[in-house]
Image (cartoon, rainbow over all chains, first blue to last red; front, side, top):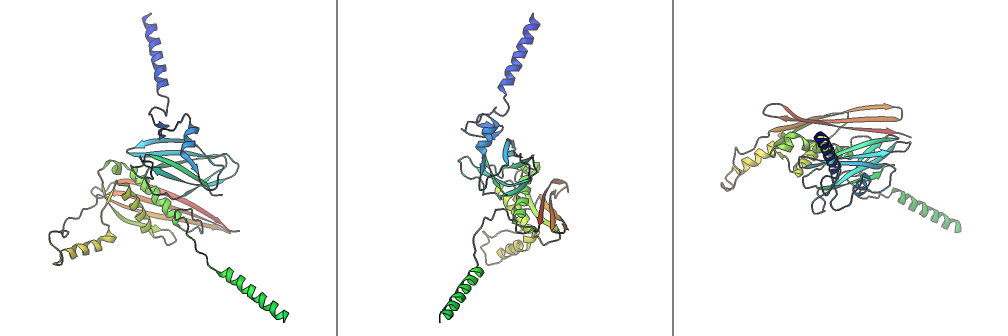
Length: 144
Length: 193
């Protein structure tokens, strides 16, 4: 009888712990490790919408996933670009760094051209250039 | 008379068209935009290499954990087949790291003669002794940054492919250990026609 109660309690405990640590939402103001502030982010799509900006010509290449982590006192970002078309696509990207006051934490980065094979993904990796950068935007533009 | 007038008008129009065609137009552009005029080493390559290397070096444990390590910049050897001002690459890396606030830079070999000349000048009787920079106060670097840039160029008929690789290394001057190293690769292909 006692053993049954203990097993049930442990199972319930594990279940509760599992629910409490919904991955990516464990820290208020962060989603998938990325700073979101007051913005409501309930899914990866919401996060991508909040962080990705298109400038200039629009591309069929889309950011589909984004994760952030702290490396020391810098912000490390992985962003996945997806090309679901049947042809090679070329886009340029840059990150824009924002400080605590919502101002630019760093000068405008250079555009970085990348090529995506047909039906493929490309992971962009970067790290913030300064500890003052607490937020960011990923800027994309088509090079076609 | 009419024929003469027509000829003069035609000549004037032709001259105007010629002048219009030769007129130069200068506009400012985006210094950080993607430049693809030729497949030689260009501003976009320099900016991408410098940014990538500086960000990588910022994450190196020796930079991230140490209290403002002192670095000196040594030569980046140009092993490509074209002229590249490698000093421009290391200058950009140095600027980005310096602005990031995690590294301090000691005067390098290229700037040493100006540094010692200024020190000597301040030691002359022209300067107030109490404010003049003293001899023997310069800080030696703990680490030295050096590297290579190589290229592989291949051309078949109308297609030219250029591959650049910049390799940088951060060496511990005291013990000779390699503390950080990274590479940045760039491929550019030009097709005529």
